[in-house]
Image (cartoon, rainbow, N blue to C red):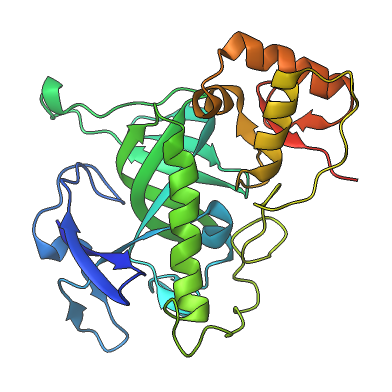
Length: 285
């Protein structure tokens, strides 16, 4: 299935494709451009106009459906296919599909993965379990005022850099649509109300954005704990904070040393746990 991928840097789109196993609304395969076609109010079809956009879950929850069965809109732009990352909090298996609740720190949404019992073993889908971090490609749907993403593809995240990259990519695309191309005449445009990316609704809201000024650390704090604190303070992130393994990988410090540093910082009231005991954020007063 071919589709356009948002290219914010050049003010246009680049073409890409991926093999989609299973539809967003049922089992089986989607083939050709018809797979992504949508009815318009006039009853005509739009072929070959699919787009794939990186988003946060809050953007999906705040998206606007102009009319029933229409494509959702974020920042005034239609969403055909979406691209999100997050942590699986619950798994619910049914006869025809498995529903995952995905949390990315900005919100929680259900992702449905349809069962394809006829697929050969080499094409069997990856099935996430609770606690897994995943990358999802699919379509946002709304039924009875409840929203879910019908997944085309779900991949496990093994490199936590992928989470940071996704959030940066989603931010860049959001700014492209709300403020115009980099260096363009619309650089001072104001974002649409209700179309923020993060929990507080700010277009670039982060915990510990680059350049944030942190509190003075007590002299008893160890050098590694200082390094971890400074990393948490200066690294772009959402309200979920950062996982221990991500910190360990980025700083090239063994995970057990990061855990010790975290215990120091938690004991001093400098950081707090968010999703679980291994995900931390800076405590700001």
